[in-house]
Image (tube, rainbow, N blue to C red; front, side):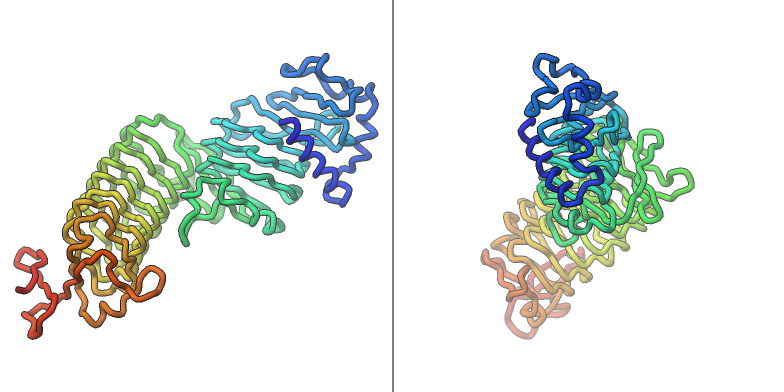
Amino acid sequence: MKNKIILTLSALMLLSACGGGSTSASSVSSELTSSEESTSIVEESSSTSSSEVSSEDPNVGTYVEDGDFTLYYEPAFHGLGLSITAYKGSEHKPILPTEYNEVPVVEVAEGAFLNNKDIASIVIPSSILLISDNAFAYCPNLIALYIPETVTNIGEAICLGDEKTRIYFELSQKEVASKIEDYDFDPELLKGPVSQPRYEVSIKPEVVFQDDFVFLIDDKVKEVANYLGSNYVSDIEIPTSYGSVAIDTIGIGAFKDLIGLVNVTIPEGYLTVSTSAFEGDIGIKNLSLPSTLTKIYSLAFSGCSSLEEITLPDALTRINWWSFSDCTSLKTINFGENITDIGHAAFQNCALTKLVIPDSVTTIDERAFSGNSNLSSVILGSGLLSLADNAFYDTAVAGDKVFYKGTAESWVAITDAFGGTFSWKDGTTTYFYSETTPETEGNYWHFDENNEPVIYE
């Protein structure tokens, strides 16, 4: 840790020399380089004895306790400023120190807030120039991190493992924001062409609390962001408003891993269910989605292993990557009338036995229904334009047959997931729909009196 801090403070010295800092190294150095002045600023900390720290040695740093914060000062680097190295409090919205005895706090050090389960919101003060590696790693309830434009250097994986966190930057920080690496978050959450951004520029929704719920609120964002109640509750009344503000979004991971949850009704008026919103809720048996719902993001209901049936609203047009993957009891999907895209592994490893894809669907992505080992009957809609050749990998229809509601001519026009000519790689046979007995030989089918597919003999 100490070596890392020394390196990062070295970087800050260079920044200051180039005009990047608001306080010069020399001005702070003049206050702190003498042993008498240093002694008046720093105190003996619980982790470091006076015999271990000597302000007369410019190569040895000193720890300072400032309320719930531990600060660190390294004289060898000309007194550029202090680092926050630890936070021991339990506040949901702690206020970070900006100075100690008129010496600025310029860094959030490596792992400073590591594994803190209480913080929900952090506003980085403008005195901070650097946020080091893993500074806020594994903070499961951190919803929002606000970074000012004074921060010009950000380390690696500052929010590693923080599944619910959004990072908010100033508009002038587009270049800095763009350097946030995928591994700052769970890589699964960042895959796919329609993944939700984990950082935003120029907006600053406020984190607020009501009962057991945490919200993100501003003119554009109206989101229930987290639930702080028991993981074993069986029913939750999802709020429709915060004060006079109507809520329309369930946030990233908001109700994740509530293993006791059985019944979920998302109220009318909700538009979005975000990434991993109900992921891992293994007890959910009854799920009711509102007619207003337009977006379900990746992994939203993944791992809801007790869910047996879902009805998707007509307002929904896309089912995103892994949205219902590993719902191992899911046997029935009632598609809405306007679904056009079924994303990568959207229903992978479910318990489907029969599947009817509506004519509105144009795209079925890779492994969309793979792993449904008992899936023995598939009817593809006539509107299909793109079909991944492994969409039904490891199902009973793979290598057997599928029923297509279009013609042989329209089937030839279908492309694979990469825009090339489609063909089954596993020997699956396609049968084409005909309302009347075909006059020519070929692979044809029709519906019987029970609306089941039957092959013409």
